Each structure stands twice: as C-alpha cells, then as structure tokens.
Image (cartoon, rainbow, N blue to C red; front, side, top):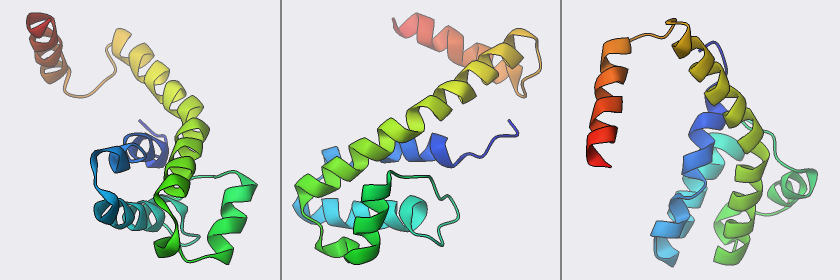
Length: 116
C-alpha cells in the first residue's frame, strides 16, 4: 500500500500495555511514546490536543498506569478510522488481484479456515 504505516503499527501497539505488569507498562509506554507520540517520532500519529499538551508538560516516564491506559485508548480510537481505510483498500485491491504475495495470502486463508 502507498499509505503511511504508522496508524497500522500504532493500533496493535496501543494494547500491548494490557499484557504487562506496572514496571513493564512504563517501559512499553516509553517505547510507544518514542515511536508514535514524540514530536520527532518517525511513525508520528495525530493525538487529541489535550494529550499532546500533557505530553509536552510532563515527562512520559512519570505517567501513572491509569493515565497510560487512557492515552493508549484515545490513540487507538483516533487511528481506528485510518486502519479501517487501509483494510478496505487492501480488500479492494486483493479482490482485483493487485496484491503482492497472493499465493501466501491464499495459504493463510486456508490455514485460518482449517483452524476454525
């Protein structure tokens, strides 16, 4: 796809903190901040203004777990529509036979059907 992959990478990463303890949560959030929220991030995604103001005022390593969860949920909600557009574009291109590695995708589909 010719789209920016930042939103597609941000979406699953925003849930990663749920699988960690509090110490790991902060490490994961610092990575999340570095990859997606920092003004100089290569994979920068847009965030609500209230979050960007907070991120500018405070150091991310001092955020509480509950606030990390809030930021992650808001980011996920913000990038969801773009992820949907990517998925719809991919499905449309695949139906027209314009995707790369179609044989691998067909194998994955067959495995998914077999697993169900």
